[in-house]
Length: 453
Image (tube, rainbow, N blue to C red; front, side, top):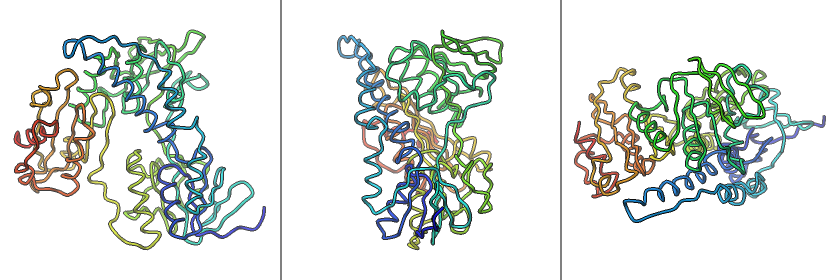
């Protein structure tokens, strides 16, 4: 092994967060080593947000066409997965080639290293035979990986995670989905709209168990309308695979079968094998705990999915900005998570920000809830088919501000914008109630929900 080289910062993992940190620090004139063993850009552009939203866009176009009868004439819909698979390859992922992303990073002055990084001590990182000493520190941005539950018989079978689902050039006739969270539901609905018979298996008593019960009901009704079978309150206990596909034995004694099996049971931080123990951190922890400057320890920052603050691209970008400002000594606001937004891109979209009603009650707040149904709004009435949704606001009565909200509907993720601002800026409820909401829009239902308080 040669002599260790000097650098200002070593960024371990160049997904969304790591690439942002590394690129901005390099542009600021620091010597930055960026290490990535898969693709620069991470999960989002290659197997997450971007390609899955292309899939969803295609599925939604089919659904809209099917709403034409009775609304605007007649329509014959013939689904074809080929253009979707082609668009994912040609437009989204360059067939899973990260040359553009690598060039973007090096173009900003970063030094790119392909390989697996091991932290060997304070400020020291090794990749194969090379070692660097980081004068300012290390940024850990290694992301998450799909959690594969220890179900008897599952290991060694050709199950799918989100990666194989996104890479599929042809769709199966039948699909079993383990997990009724956002990833499982988004992929299930797309596949169903392209003619796949889908069965979702969720251990909790409802889908989207982390969201409002009203969100779960809305999602369940939407999936049912697309012909998806959902089984809640049951767990997979045994998996077998043969030439015919998968057979899954459930905790209620029943068995379900499918050509393919998608495992969407959550994600876990990639912390093993990094050498975290050499800097006093626990490699078996679920996530890295950060302070409001994204610091994990002296000279160590963490950003993105590894922090456990929400596995979303927007959280990684937000945390990257906080870390960059701290490393460059620029000050500014620290990390604040009271207005975390999230969107499940089913149809209808389910957007949420801040606390759910239950979380607010568990936090001991004096809670008041406002609700309005989208189909009963003017825009919902005009929209007709596909108008399912609602607005729910969660108020801390003692302070007179929103602490959480959900917007479900055809543009649920877009309507969430106004609610995110309200929660983040702690806009008084009285001010929101006196706000003029344009008519006839979906977002006007926010006003309806506020007036229902």
